[in-house]
Length: 242
Image (cartoon, rainbow, N blue to C red):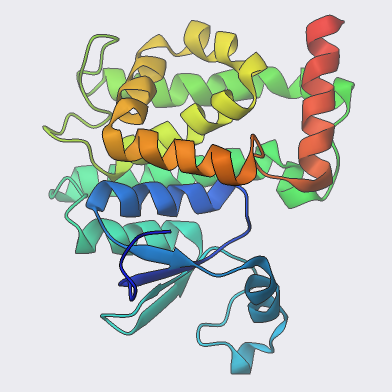
């Protein structure tokens, strides 16, 4: 994905945005080079016995840092590692912990939006019941930012001078979701206007805009993919026309 013939990082993830996009956005923001395994290699790595895997894991994303000889699975662990390596943590214990909380919240939202990674499909009724909870999640992120000086006109999620991991995670979670599922954008703007503005500002950064353009070119508007995304889109559309 980057021009370096032997980039520092390698990413195993599916050809969709979803959890892998958090890793890509962090790498792009850090100016780090990476390449990505093809879908067959991802499937092969998943199918290996745990004792044969370089890092025992259930599913991607998996990140390899070739320079440091480190391989990690699980999105929160990968992001924590990259944030420390590339200076994207606030640097004080309280806000570092809040950054991890933001990542954990984002992971919870992804789990809920996919109904526990596709354990169930969405129905119109289930989606209607869930929308108030999704609105609450948006409000939680928005209020977190407001308590650290975030407004529609400026600021960062945790009051840092520069954008850090918390801002990247915020943008990828809510910006990517509402870009690929545009029917959710009005709810986002209405429920969390300061958060929506922050997401837009981060998304307009050159490296993030370029990443988004490459991602759409490669994978279209796929967000989480598969049957679960199809059921999600159908449920959202049914509610919009109902």
